Length: 198
Image (cartoon, rainbow, N blue to C red):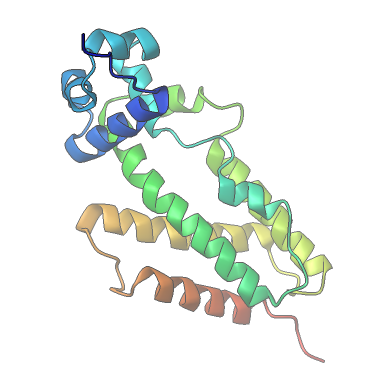
């Protein structure tokens, strides 16, 4: 007698994410079930509705890893090194998240329903945490006093816009590889945030 295939919830979510990103919100749960070699009712038994499955597979965590990492810093290293790390981690997050959020919005789920999934909206958490990181950088003498909200908005906007353009046109707006973009943005920010001399 053949053994029943064991498929974990994380396997289901990974395949659901792949299918939703590849085919859009209209993809049938039958397609997901067939790829996993399980039954469609098994998916519904674990996740409820197709919408619940989509949200579980595509929604970002309320506090992404790159945001959590900000809470431990900054340290004493040159600010350009630390900005490069922050930008690299955040850029990777947005590259994954923006396509997923596009699928969710295309499904017709409202912004209000999405925000109801979180105690505080993830973009708000990210911005607040980045502002606090910049403030601590100033207190440590790594950067000069600036409008920290404007600086955080500029950093997040530069990363989100790039990921958005890749999603829309299929390529980065500057044509530069991700690593070059990270380095250039960190360098530009460092010069703009550098402590005043004299």
